Structures are given as C-alpha cells and as structure tokens.
Length: 233
Ligand SMILES: [Zn+2]
Image 1: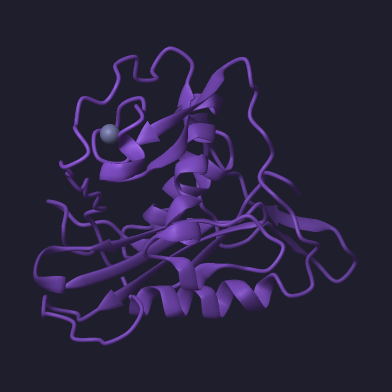
Image 2: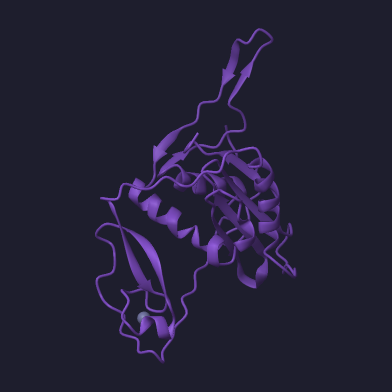
C-alpha cells in the first residue's frame, strides 16, 4: 500500500509525514523493530470469515539496547523539559518536541507502552506560527493520548537487559562523567548508554563555567497518526 499521498512537511530536504514519524518512533517503542504502518488489521464478512488481513513488513532497524537508551532519553522532555504537559498519570511517556527554522513547523512525537503518536502543527505553506503557551502540537498529542489511555492500566517501560546497558551520572554542561564541581556549575543527570559507548573522561569545567547543550528535531503535518505499539500488548 503506498502512502505517498500523505503530506510531507518542511525541515528535511524532501519533508516527512506524521505517519513516517509515528512509524519511526514506534520502532523505538518496539525495541528497534520497525513495523510498516497500516490503517487496518483485518476485514471480516458477516459470518466472521477473514476477507482481508493486513500484512505489515517488519524489520530490525536498531538494536534493542540502543532503543532502550533512546527510550530512556526521551522520557526526559516529559519529566523536566519541553513536553512536561504530556504526562499521563501512572504511565511511562517518552516524547520529543520539534521546531524548524522560523517556527514554521511544531511537532510532538512520542509513545507510551501502549501507543505511539506524532502530531504536527503549522500552515500548508511555510509561515511562522505565533502561539503563546505550550507547543501547540503537544496540545493535540496529549488531547488524544490522554483519552485513549483513560481505560488502560498504568504501565511503565520494560527494563532493558542490564548487561547490555550501563547507567552513568553525567554533567549537564560537558556531557562527561561528573566531578565535584559539576553540581555547582550546571548540575548532573543520569543517562543510560549502550555498554561500551558511555563517556570515560571526566568533566574539566570549573565551577564558574557553564555551557548549555541544545537538542533539536528537525522535521514536520496537521494530522494525528496513531500506531498501535506491539510492545506491552
Ligand atoms: Zn561538569
């Protein structure tokens, strides 16, 4: 089934659709397995005979350890960052906001143990979005996601295989291992790494220095796309 008719939005050379974004985020939610999005699972006739069943291609696009590390990383914007309005009571939520040049596109992509959703907010033709308050895409996202989780049991993301991942305390300024001065110059946080990729050097900033790290998603659609996550079903 071709999905090329869906709108594709700015930021990237050829744009990207909310469906593609939801598919990509669902791969993180599904421990690195990409599942081709579909709009139906099966069609039955009056007697319950299956007339048509959806065949979704599946392929491994990243390791389970990498997806666990990214999943953990993506919980941070919900806890302490730009997506704090996207919490769902009793539920693990991973999400990332995105904005492109001149505020032409606003995104919110994220998932829970149950569902993945990607929302885009903007104009058909690139125009700056002027909106006071939270990221407008996040308002659509949480509006839909909070409702579809209403009757579901609270659930947290499954722990990764601990022999393949390590957890380290990291300096917020340098991204390196913490020293005593890190708490004074910027603070620290805990990050999950695929074993062998964790930093081994210690922060060399003194307590008077501070550099802020920035992270951005560059991409872009006014459609809400929901893809059922296989994980945790
Ligand atoms: Zn430091």
